[in-house]
Image 1 (cartoon, chains in turn green, orange):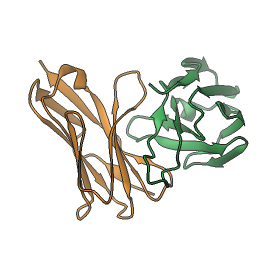
Image 2 (cartoon, chains in turn blue, cyan):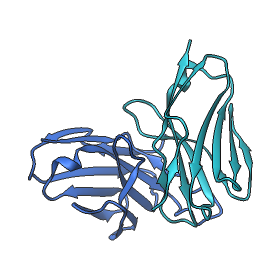
Image 3 (cartoon, helix red, strand yellow):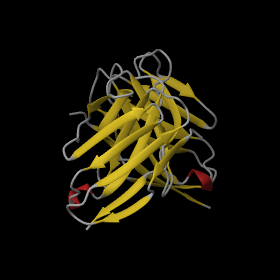
Image 4 (cartoon, helix red, strand yellow):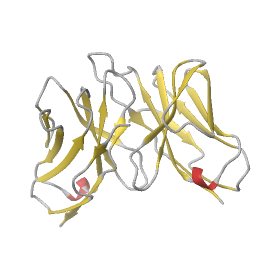
Length: 117
Length: 111
């Protein structure tokens, strides 16, 4: 299994509070991603990083920010949580962007379940 | 946006039978596809991938078929086992841009 650790695994918070989810990898992969998974939807990309301090938005980035100060850590922050951000959040890593002729496989963490009351 | 969907949301098969899970995609420019397995409470796990220059790829007990003409992807699992019970979903990628994921098919294996 790819060395990806997400924390916390479960969190319940109240509307309006800040929340930070952490993803830690031991694979030294360049690319890191945050996805959310909701019933009736496939995994949707929130933000991704292609290197230290290099990040970009995904398709559902509103209300979220990210930071990557070290190769191994990618943080997802909800500045002011809302009920619509109740979801399961997955971190993923990859050693390519998919442009390589080699596999562009994404390795996923175990997920962080966030409930916003 | 992309549209990656599955024909059947649930599938039940007898242990030992073969399973076929289907996926339709809408972007004819997609050139890389992955099948993932997700067990309850866990993260998605890579099963097999295929690039658009191939129409078939085999792994251990799994085969992925790609039909670019009708933009269809399928996952075949041979001799399905109870441990195969999970949600399976496909993902597509165009030229290294972001992946788009299907909603998944829930496979139940009946002992």
